[in-house]
Length: 113
Image (tube, rainbow, N blue to C red; front, side):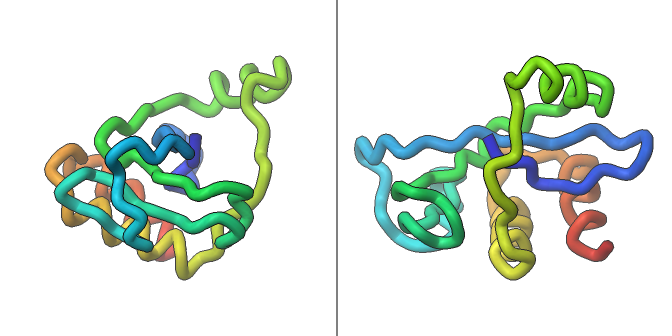
């Protein structure tokens, strides 16, 4: 999973799933809005394999839950996506239908911080 925002004190953490299974997914770098995907090639920035970020389901978790999952080693940070790439992902969210205005606001607020 990839966290797509930097929450302030009372905001939820927004996470989306990733997959390395190509199946019928195109290998077109960047935003693929008609499929609600964002494609990152292996090695860019730190993914070892080709990775599709699935933007169609955003999961919201509070900070207490994330801390608990981290302590139980269910969630861990493996790297940080560079700011430019995160801005591209944030802009991709604007092009899909499966994201609420509230979630868009939280994602954009993180990009401006």
